[in-house]
Every structure is written in C-alpha cells, then in structure tokens.
Image 1 (cartoon, rainbow, N blue to C red):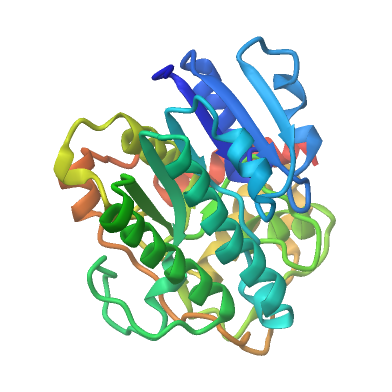
Image 2: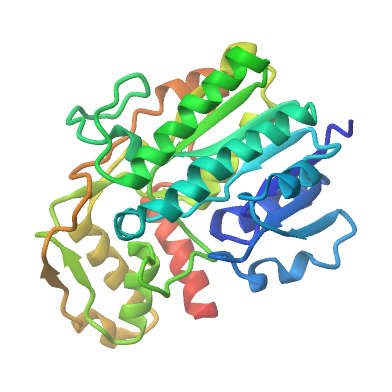
Length: 323
C-alpha cells in the first residue's frame, strides 16, 4: 500500500477541495470522491490535469462506489456530508441517508480495503444543549437538530469500528469553518460567505436574533493543519479520539458582521454605511460555541496558525477577487 495515497470524500466541496490542493502540494496521490450535490467542479478544475489527482464522480450512499474508491488507499479523509442545521430540519431523511448510511458505507469500505487510518469530519453541533464553556471533548449535551444527531452517530460508529474491527479513526469536530471557496450562494449558505457577498452586493445582512450568540470561527488553514496532523501523527494515544478543530476563541455574530463590513470597506468605502438588520432566532442554533483545544495541542501538537481576524482578512481578500 502506498503510504502517500489518500482518498478525500467530498473533495469538490469547500473543505475537501482545500484538502485536495494541500495534499497534492505535499506530493500525495489524491483521489477525490464527490457527487457534486453541494461541491463544485470549479473547485477542483485546476487539479484535473495533475498526474497525482484522480476524480471519481459517485455517491457515498452507494457501497460499490465506496469500495472502489478505497482500493489501495492508506488514508481516508471523509468530508462528504450534507451540512446545515436548517437543511436537516427541513429534510431529516436525506441528511440521515448521506450522513449516517453514507458514513457507514465508507467505514465498511475502509475496513474491507485495510485502510490504515480513517479521519472524518465531526461537528461542534454534537455539543448540543450543553451550556458549559469552553467545550471539552468528553462533555456533550443532547443534540438540537437532526444534523447534530447524524454527526454524533458518526462518532459512535467510528468508535465501534475500532472496537469491533480494529479500524483506527480520528474525528475532527469542526467549529464554524470559513475561508476560500466556501459557497456564498443558496438557501443553506454559511453565515460568513453569505454576509461577505451581501455586503459586496450592497445588501443588508440579517442576523438571526440580537447578535449576541457567539461562535469559535475557524479559518480553513487551521482545519487543513488538523487533517494533516491526524494522518501523520505517530502518537498511538492520539488515535481513536475526537478533537475540537477550532481556534479556542469566540466572536459574537454581531462582532463578526461588523468586522466583515469594516474589512470590506477598505475595498469599497460605501460598504461602511450598509446597515445590519436583525431577525428571529433560528431553530436548532446553539447559543454559544467556544472550543477547548487543549487535547489537540497535547496529543497532536496542534497550534492554530490563524486567528479569526487574520483568517477573515485572507478570506475577504479571496472573495473580493473571486466573487
């Protein structure tokens, strides 16, 4: 088995395409599996002619496709999922099909093909109604949405596959990831790219609630670092764990919107005058999100490279050029 051959599911998505780009730059052989339900061909267009890049257009809900994609692969970085709390509330069945049944297909395929390590995208939504801050991996509450339930089930299945079949896994609980290539369009767009686009288009963004809810916004480069550490660590104690993938700091939604407006106003001074509006609190939203990154620091030697401020400046620079 080639130690530098990896499979990235959801590789045409926001996080997945950034992982593809990074690991190609590190001379890995990268296979991307995507059905383009939420990912975009444009995200991987520049890799299609790369000698170390292979695209498989397929769905993780099909076991045969998963089996084929996992052949001769040393590591799986499983990013494929249907994100968004509101989407899962509107359509819990499809979210479950993709996030649970699809996840199980990938675990089975990884097991059957003797994959060395299975690293997967977990979620901070798993903390649910737990009010304790910062969020520590061992202490979770009850999930507040179908999406959160699916991501918690992923963690249970991963632990069971180690116990039952000996498959090594690492779960990365992503905290509000943002950055280049994150899609600002659609009903389920994440808040940062959505607000960036609205300000650029001279539209007033609407905050759900009074803006006091807070998030541990995490720039994409921090997430890339955690995925890299997860597949390269030689620390046996680091395996078969879940880790907060975050900065360890929080920003209120109101502050986030104001920082975006202020940063964009350097490119277009008229943006500074755009009003921020407020609406109803959204169902399933966790009030506050702040991660402890102590476990990741201790076991994986993780040190975030980007604060929220540094990340938002880089992200806005990318959006200004590409929107």
